[in-house]
Amino acid sequence: MKGVLDRIEDGIAVVLVHELNAEFTLRAEDLPSDSEVGTWYHIAKTAGEFTILSIDEKETIQAKKKTQLLMKKLQKKKQGSKFKR
Image 1 (cartoon, rainbow, N blue to C red):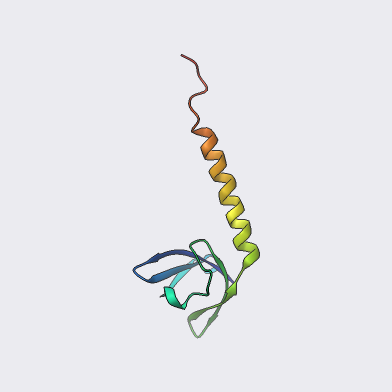
Image 2 (cartoon, one colour):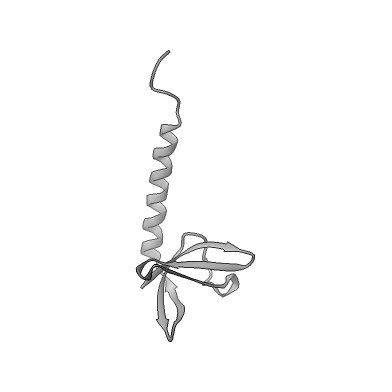
């Protein structure tokens, strides 16, 4: 299963697990190195506990590209009105 690092607040990382519509927290220092908000992970759940197995590089890169594309579209829309006065 997969999860994404949603945020880090006061040293606590919040990871969203979309497949289960759940979230879990862990200390930010326990995250894999190179983790940042938006990083996707391969996750396992055993005995009710979530464990991050590894970073999902492919999903992380795809999500970043999608975000960049959406940001470009939004920036284009901000370039003033198309209507003349």
